[in-house]
Length: 487
Ligand code: CS2
Image (cartoon, rainbow, N blue to C red; front, top):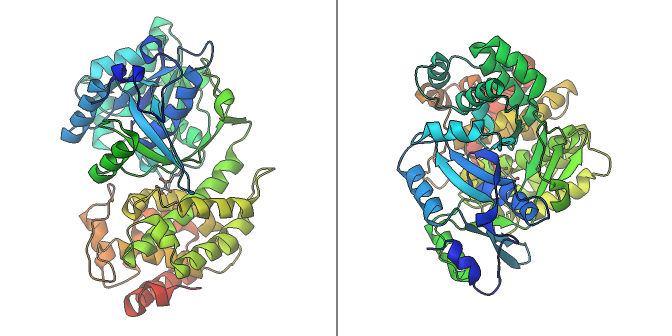
């Protein structure tokens, strides 16, 4: 097991943090310590901590979920002094391994909620960041408002115990900070959402309003929610991958991580209580992040799920294998070139054609061995975020709906859990219940269009789109994905 003693004697080729991790303070609390956070935000902060005057910005991670897996992860972090290794793997096969020291503590909220509140209320905490997934903000897509009716939110609002939701924790901590004079902190969403800062604002203010109008007004005035675009492909690491990563690095890491060599973080510079010098380590600060997030979500994430749904049905399990299939590669290129790029407003200096090439080359990186079931997982939330604008624009322009209809059809067919060869798999759909899944199996192939995934364009849905989706589902069943592809 690795821990801080290993830093004195790292295997050849492994870089150490450029600072002493035991000597830094913590100014950031992060909710949702998944692989993406560990390879992205923690990677940037890690490099910042090595710069003069930046030693107060270590991160305290918070896990919100209960259960054996979370407990095991917490135990590994504890045993390793929260250190872990990141392997950055380029498409040409070259690799770099570094030990990341930015995570300084890890708290499991269900086990010790009071410790989480203490940390959030501490004046040293000046930024709260989060990766809680696209669907984690508890927003009703049709009304665009925070849902107060979910059991966990109701229980937190009733306030008869310590909170369990991120909304409960953050808003309670802000109430304490307002009372103590510790002041606000900045709230930064690192999820792939359109205007993720605005969404976070809607969520946290929505919760706060239901709790205490005065506190909500104080938050609206003092807390900032910068929008940001985050990007780095970070696959799931199973036991076999972990063993291979450790064999290559020479480390004995319980929590090794692999990510592509590409990474990007574009942020609005709206930090109400200070921030690390992230601009010195590659974070781009811009006045308006809209164009960047539009390009990223509508091109990268949208084509990623398009590939995942169709690829899974064809029996593929990994992204780079799917893209090596000439028919699927042609299809996803046509989708980007004809349906997405013409309707984008890219920021100055960003060439969507070059971006398309770069995205597809990143997808073909074999070192990622990225899982289609991960990419296609939680499709219900992702479809809403990644496809809605493209569908709405195609309908408004009276454009060709065949490719997007095919993508929607592939999503619905994929949800049935059996590929064309008859092999089963389990789609990961945390927000769909049995009644939703029954709609997918309904003989009426249009019935599934009632799923929440399609709420974002329900008000403009046309019979032509419905017909195209039903026809594509039928074609996939009758002829198979390959023959049913619209290009
Ligand atoms: C993927 C993302 O889950 C998805 O749909 O597109 O996890 C993707 O790998 C990241 O957004 C890349 O930055």
